[in-house]
Length: 391
Image 1 (cartoon, rainbow, N blue to C red):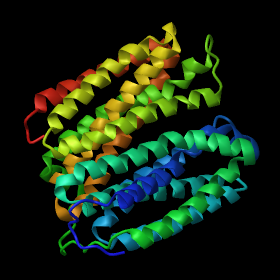
Image 2 (spheres, rainbow, N blue to C red):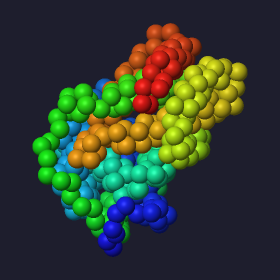
Image 3 (tube, rainbow, N blue to C red):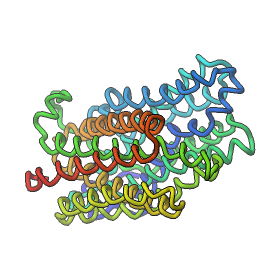
Image 4 (spheres, helix red, strand yellow):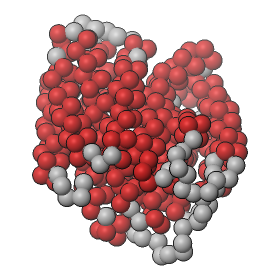
């Protein structure tokens, strides 16, 4: 199917395809998290080293942001998406066939590389297809698909592995990506190539796009807070008095999904010129969320409320950040702008993950919540001070 651009309003079926494809792509990066014990036992990897599987996928993700995602500004996007889908299917099959630690790590590196490249490439693709007046709405829906894939990946992987083993998870995903690739090739509209121009380097893009710098720093602080919570949440829940199992802990992702999907509307509000209000409201919610999260000792209901507020706040700001960055970025650097923003995201997530487990081990859950509140307050202060500077 081919379409002339800009479209007056992106068709709902095409928008759903973007959201589903992005969700399935990003899920590949996170399937391994609940499977680490099975991977360690099957491939005889020591418990002290099994974390390298997650590190390999994250290293692949960073490499994708630096090198693969910016290709969307220099290659025909539809053909690039087909090539990346084919390569991702091969990588997933290599994971399923892995017989030793080294082969698994190399395959996981490739999965992180290609899964991330497809995910962020699809968001940039959706934004490029959308008319300017609906770009925020389109990015919001596509990002909701990403969040659904990210959060549900752990639940799906655990369920499929219980039925057919961990290799079945990757075989099923490979089959789903084949179907996804066929649908993308069949229905994605062809986009004209950007006018020939010299490539903008990452430092130059940051220098020329103040919105990217400001929103990137907000994203870094926001995802530091996000990482603080999600990286350490399982520790108090698996300990007395709760003693929850993996399935019960993973179910909290479904609560986060409700909040994240509710945030998809924030892109629509950004399109209407309310980006500052959405940002400040989201950051206030982010700060407020640490109050019920810190009350975990009083009952799990407080945790449910806190997770709902946290994910609603984070995804509302995330969608708003992306829509503003894409609106401000040069036409020949849309994909690179998304990649640059996601580097801030990766840095914040990594920092939060490292700090969360360390704080919990040293000082307990209260220290994690205190640090999260401090980071959230810093983000709110930064947004207030920067309000009105062309968002």
